[in-house]
Image (tube, rainbow, N blue to C red):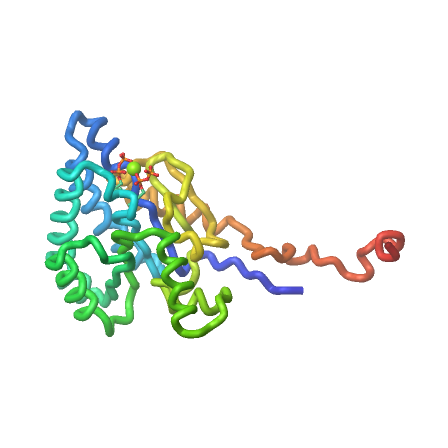
Length: 249
Ligand code: IPE
Ligand code: IPE
Ligand code: MG
């Protein structure tokens, strides 16, 4: 019988940080105010994940589909990203956080790409929490680029070969995927890596997602029984447990 343990703490938590615009609108403010406040939530969530011994925290910051937003909003977001990556990296480095970025990187500015590369280089040897920022990211893009690399490498496209060429190669699969903001969809996030993730949806908007809300998600995760297609412990079918007629047919 396969042993399918349910560890209380997820190794890899991924979050769709949704609801910034609505959080601002609820307060009569422009959407970008929500993005700014959402940035402080990111800082707190990283701290909380460290405290809870999560190994990998992947944050969806900007999807490939988000390029279809108004130019002014995109510009504000890009400025916020550049500032955050520059300002936070020293402190994250002190805390042994390893910072990495996943995404296509084809439409980001050279200056932002440079900031991202510096942050990755500075923190590359750190051994604490891994924080992966998905920016200009799409799950379909990720699978396609991995499959394309299999072809370039002269390999048959297999689950193992694709996994080893995804932008998340080397990281454990997602255990817990959280989406704030009330929608129940993946919006092209880690489609392959979340194949067996536990999905947690909350109406809480991202800027309001505090430690207590994060804790609720972790507590919910700890109650899940993960089966990975197997059968629950103690429920395996043994030759003795199969009725004689069923066993014959
Ligand atoms: C998520 O918040 C942040 C990004 C997609 C960059 P939204 O901007 O999608 O906020 P809502 O969903 O419109 O409230
Ligand atoms: C998903 O949120 C993308 C990020 C949080 C970065 P969206 O607000 O873009 O998703 P949809 O459009 O509601 O699916
Ligand atoms: Mg949204």
